[in-house]
Image (cartoon, rainbow over all chains, first blue to last red; front, side):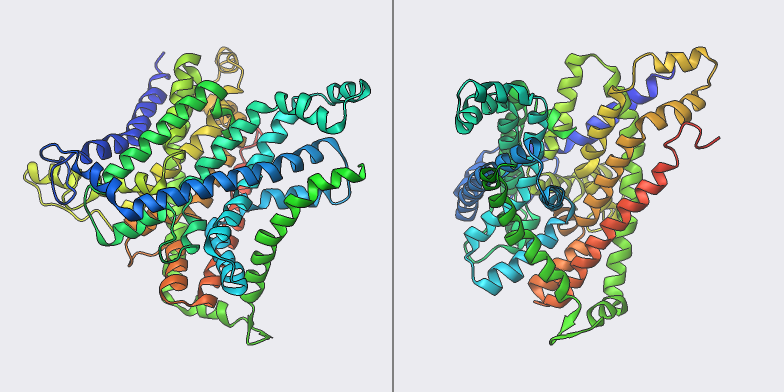
Length: 260
Length: 274
């Protein structure tokens, strides 16, 4: 069919546009030049060693992981009960709470970052680390709520009522009946929330002080003064990390559903 | 609702109010007050500054161009993805998602390698005997970088929109004598308009608020609203100036959402254009 050619050509163009930069950065990170150039000359692993030796990157990485794990767990601990209550009960203010729980997706993250800096850190002297965690947690709650709601909507309430009428307590019902059934949704939101926090720039940008900055912010700071392939090497490692996460979670959970 | 169930709702609500609603409300309110009294001063300052106006119009211009480019490239590609076998579709969708899950600094950095003075394109040009050109720190660089960053957000809603169209709709229209153009305008567009609206909204608002790409590829002289905001807050420590930019940025995204809904709503009905 003639008409089917054009979309396929566009698909190839798009995939090349989307993925070629990843390939180019991969190649550039092995180049044996002091400054970044493409195509590179020679071959070296020196830039990977440099990147892993940089104290600012190592510390940024640990902070990023710490903030991402804690905020993701908090967002699940707060978001899953909220989603459960709104899907199973009617109460006054439910609409309002639902709107508030989705707002962080609509408000630009940079604006939230500025607000947190002015009214959390400057005004109340809250230290950076808890501020970062608090900021990331609010950002992640909408995702944990939405994905949990979607899984809960596939679980009939009758099953829970059956468990209760057979003598299970509310808590037992939740942990033995509800949670196993929404497990995939909870795991999906864990992975998604972790990645969103780990990669976040706009909120973390303002919540940064001397010696305390997440990895993406450290990379931005480093790039202001340096233009060597160690950033390319670090980027390569991060790209490999997300490739691994995407393919494993797609295999196990079908994470692409979370984006639709 | 039983009383115990409030303990499910209250913790999350409290955190959202304390760390989100309250700081943002205070931020918004503060833009209208100076030394305790109501004033428009910070807004008139914004309007009278040519740097702010330039950043504003540059942001809207770039966001519009990127959104149009994302539709032009993403629409046919999403159609193609929805027509291939399930096996391959899963792989391609994972590849579209991959960039979304990747550190944005790493993603944007790759464009430095491509567009830089000793980058791929300039080395190619000089190898061919041409003059090298300045590609970095231009609006073009920002457009390419933002398109790369946000095109997955256009693709994903479009792919699911196309997947929801029954396979025999297009053959049915053909057998009833519709031309290619008619099928496109009166069958495909109305059936995918919801996905198109979502995609365009995500891409446009993404461009208005993105920080990393304009910071790396635009440099300090070609500011967008996001980089202007950061410059005011971090370099100049001008809180009220930064806050106004923040409010303007948020307002721009809200207006854009409304306009996109309106404009795309025209195509909603299959008879909309007849």
